Length: 243
Image 1 (tube, rainbow, N blue to C red):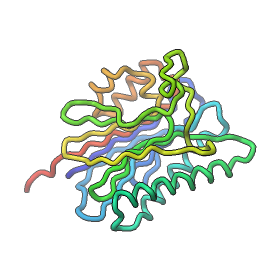
Image 2: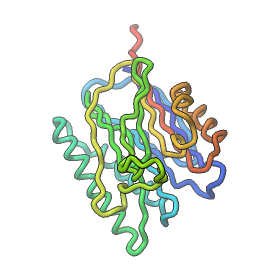
Image 3: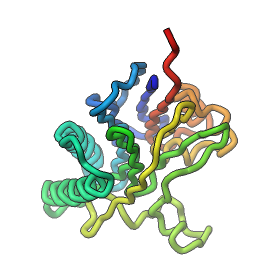
Image 4: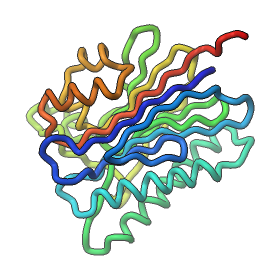
């Protein structure tokens, strides 16, 4: 298969600094953009694409998001070959507990937090990860589906009067956890990983219509208000063309 990606991270229209950060493969992105396409090698293949949204209103959110991205990059690089699905999931959860403690200990007396969501590809296995209210979506056969569940009090209580921005779980909180879902990638799949600066600014219909362009989605988020930092990763998987 061919994997193409586009990543963009923007401060938005009102925030003074960008507390979001994206990780794609080994590259971190903040206040920047990038795109690339390559053939997925057979055998041992590891690929990470995550978005971390440092919480506004908490000190050093940009530090927490960077710590999480850099740590996940190192974790992905260090994964040994031959793990089965259960061992891979356990490795991710162990890593999550470790970086959570590191973020907590790095800010004694000052709470710094970040969400984390995205995809880890390990051979033929894909893991969808989530902690917080950033989101990962998939489009398959022209049908868009949100693969993650927001860890917000609004979703937990089913109370629409509760502000959607109030979350109960993310990195930097004692006892934080990460949801891990096992899936497979097939040719034609597209994935969208984003902070709530996107999902909170545009409709589901707009997202579905512009799913394959991070640049277009960013412009729609800014037109929709641009109240928050906006970080977007778009991944496209396609068949390798025959020679």
